[in-house]
Image (cartoon, rainbow, N blue to C red):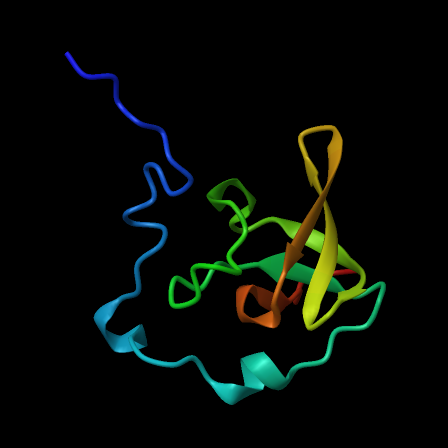
Amino acid sequence: MVKRTHGYRYKSRKLLRKKPRERGMSGLSRLLYEYKPGDKVVIDIDPTYITTAPHRRYQGKVGVVVGTRGRAYVIETYLGDKKKIVITTADHLVPYQGGS
């Protein structure tokens, strides 16, 4: 038997896939949105851009923008009790619409 690999995109077939009506480039409003430090964002991985995508364990997590690094954003989020830093571009971020 060969040992099964557990790569970076392991078990993510459904997660990192677009529905037929979502195919193609995403809208400009999502890319042109400017985030400021302190803004809350939701990490929503766009499978079109693989190189800048965060790990799939952060999909759907709410975080706070801490700053920028080049054209990428530094997001502070929690994974259980641990505070984590995620660096990703605006392609994978959506403004948080929830309360406070």
